[in-house]
Image 1: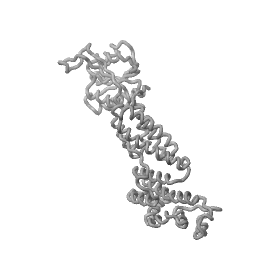
Image 2: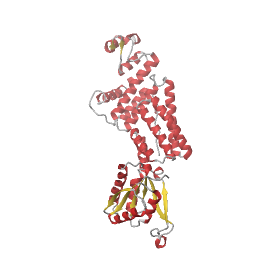
Image 3: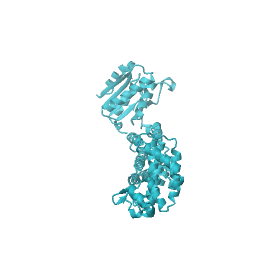
Image 4: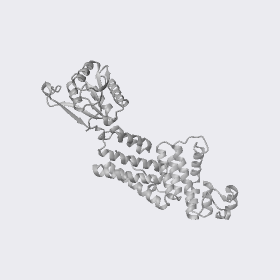
Length: 414
């Protein structure tokens, strides 16, 4: 562990251990965390260490008050930040002071990524139960245990990832990487998670090419971490990432790099719709269901009959409905046909898809009504989630999609 540039030191009634700690580490700046009763000890310490350093002081009125100890310990951390010291520069000595002072100083410093030092000893007064005897002090240094615990951060990361809040995940991971010791295995974990989370964020934005690249890189780092540590949860998570990569690779190979409209686009929209529903973004969820329905018609017309719904040639429309379609949807030399008309065209062409569409006409009409009334379409009404599951089932039936075909993102348990 390198020598620190700055220290935070809790001061109690015994200055000797703190003098030894300062002499051992020789910081250029010290923030003294002390009660009003121990003010005089700071002068003794400064006189005894044998060199000059800059310092500041944070005083407590009541060193037994947990709340005050926590607030003032946070002030110590703030003072070092304002002085321009990074986490690698700072060492926290929690030897002195009351137990509330030491405990709250540790609590405030833990999430900053600071390292710690404690002056113990080989001999104590009161038959080994009292304070360390002068001359028997031992300086004990340790890395920040954040790497091994970070319980709250891990809980938040798990919660945010599994609810599709990938931008929030990125913020937590950035903080984690700043706090991890550079040589720890946790660095590889959070680097791998950073790439993987970014990949899923790009997938959520339908940027499939970039998503595949990021997920592939993240998969490699997480695989390495799982091998080195034997972490079963990450191994299981990464297995799900591998399944998603297989899906994206197949998706790309069947669509000329995601360019050609396909059934994979429909499956992806259904998956995306589910995630928006779980987030409580019901307008977005319904909008994606509508687009999946529309895309199903476009895909069938394109692949089976070579018809592009935005550029339909009149001669591609069966004679029985041609005049009607040209009149309604003609745009110059071509036709541009909407959702219902696309299924009408499939019916005129004798496609089986139109039969399912007609059988589900009542439910589809409800979906279209909700979508058209929403603020993301033509109306001002918010969408509630009450009928979503029924709508999803209807769209999947119409699109001919089985439950196990819709891609799912893995669950993170960290």
